[in-house]
Structures are given as structure tokens and as C-alpha cells.
Image (cartoon, rainbow, N blue to C red; front, side, top):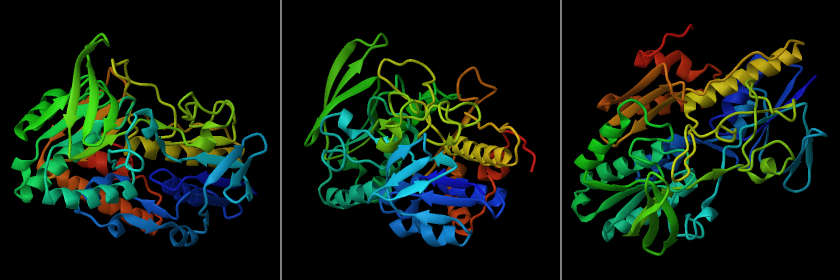
Length: 424
């Protein structure tokens, strides 16, 4: 009998638990360990931040969902990993032994890398967690009574640019509905070398399409922006040229700011010798397995993926839902194979697929593979994307409630977009 422990219960951890439970015999145990006792559908956080969703719409209690499928749950943070002994230490001092460990923790938000950044001790907001989205919402309600400038964007080292664009457009749409947009100058500030880079070197016609969208909504922008510090009501950024030399200094006033931070690995994972790169992301082979510890697998934002290209201001590569889903499926296949005495053969993908809401329309992009040159390089805009994201939110939350282990993207999204044909 083997004990498989999954560390993290987000977009990777919960599907991993369901898939492993579905694939493994009843003699094997599956346990999920999470620092919080709830699952949050992170892609909906921009909607929570402006009041288009309530917290309870996108948050689910974990324990009853897992217990219904015969999966154990421990709602405590992991403070240390002894990879040699295959043992976790939990907050409070208890330990948990494993035969296989699946790390799906997501990232640590590295606000400390820019002085004055972050919603807890700084002056900027985030939509990386539902708690942060609610914090923004509270300040947004006060802002609506006394509107002023808004800054939205991504800090140096950020890797997930889609939500930054998404949030700028959602704020624009919400303010227009409230007939307050004319009182709110907006600026998009990003470490990307150009609009539409997305951490992917651009996808299709993303540059011109997103520039056009920003212009049509009266949103100014600063790219190649190295945000250096944030003070109350002011964001300071150095704009670099293509050679990485300072070109212009910006001092941007704001009444409200949402800047996505750079990511790092969570402390307990980053501290394991030989497990991670210097940023704390897990180094894996083609089978999602640690290069240093064969009993450890990893998926999602916490894995190490190199940037698509060097940029004047550091940018990372995003890990989209489709990518995470294929990683999780590969892990489930490979652990099941090893327990059956067979070699691991399943591989995830680094293909990037994203549905981004823009308030009253939306944009979808597909980069297959993520690193150019690509077989598919596709970027489209339309109201249908707005509705597709709503439908995907409802489907994924239903999947989490029901414990469905089917891969969503492979069976539905890609076929709906008509991009690739995959076997059922």
C-alpha cells in the first residue's frame, strides 16, 4: 500500500487528488495537505474585486468534497519537507509520511522585491488570492465615492500578465457602467517589453489588438517598466530601452493601484536541498518528477519553466490552466504506472491556452508550443470569450463539487475553439 500526499489544494492540487483517487486502487491512500481549508477559483478573483462575484460564489470548503471521494484532508501549513526520509512537518509539529509527494502549492507572492508593494504592508493591491480581491473591493467602494487615477499592471519578474490586462479592462467596463469612467485616468504599467508580449513573446496579433483595445478605452501604458518603489499615492518606475538602459523616469499618481507581483516558491519547498532553482521553483524532468528526488512530482505555477526570451526588464513565462491540467494528468498516470511496476511515460505540455475576460468582451489566445516557433499561434477577440469564461468558471466549480476527474480543456475547450482535435 502506498501513501500519496498532495501539497496544495488549488487549481492543480484538487484535480490531482481526484485523478489519483480515480486511477489508484482502494488499497492506496491519498491525502491532501493545504494551508487553508477552502478551494478558490483564482480566475474569478478580478470579478470578486469589482463586486461581480461574491466570495461564496467562487470558494468551496475542501474537507467534505474530498472525504466524499475517500481522500483524507489536513488543513495545516507544511513547515518543512524531509525529502530523504519522505516526511512532512506540519504547523504544530506533527509529521506526515509519504511514499509519493505531489507539490502543487502555487507560488509565494514576492511583494517584498519592490519596496512599498503589496496589500498587507504596502500600497498596492493584488488579485492573486480571493482575500486580496476582497481587500481591493473594500477600497474600491471607498474609491467610487471619490474617484481618481488608477494604475494597473505587473511588477518586474512577473509571469502572469493575462490577469493584469483582464483587470484593467474589467475596471474600465465597471466604471463605465457606473458612469464614472470620465473621472478616472487609467495607466497600464508592465515589465513586458511591449503591449501583448504576455510573457510569451507575443501570440498571433496580440500586440496590435491589445494596443487597439487600450487606446479605444483611453488607457495609457508604460512598458519595459521597472517599478522601483511605491509610496502612498505614487508609483515610481524606470522605463528601459531595448538595450536595458534607462530611458525615462515615471512618477505615476494613483488613488488605487493593482500591480501583480513576481512569484517565488513557497518557503518549505524552496528550502529542500537540490529540489528547486534559485527562485524556489521545483526542477522537474519531462515526466513532472523532481530531478533530485524520484518520489516527488510537481505541477502548476510552482514548477520551474524558463522564460520564453530574455527581456530588458525580467519577465517570466505563464502557466495556464490547460498546461496545469496536462501536468496533473501526467502525474496521475505516472504514479499509477510506477505502483504497477511500469515505467513513467506520460508527459505534460507547455502549451499556453487562455480565456481572458474584458468586462463586456474577451480575448482568447493559444500558443502551441509555448516557446516559439509554434505550430499554432492564435489570438482572437470577441464577446463569445466573455461568455466562454463564465461557462468555464461554472464547469470547473461543478467539477470540483462533483469530484470529476475528467480533463476539462482536452475534452471541451479546445474542441469548442476548433483548434485541435483530441480523442475522447
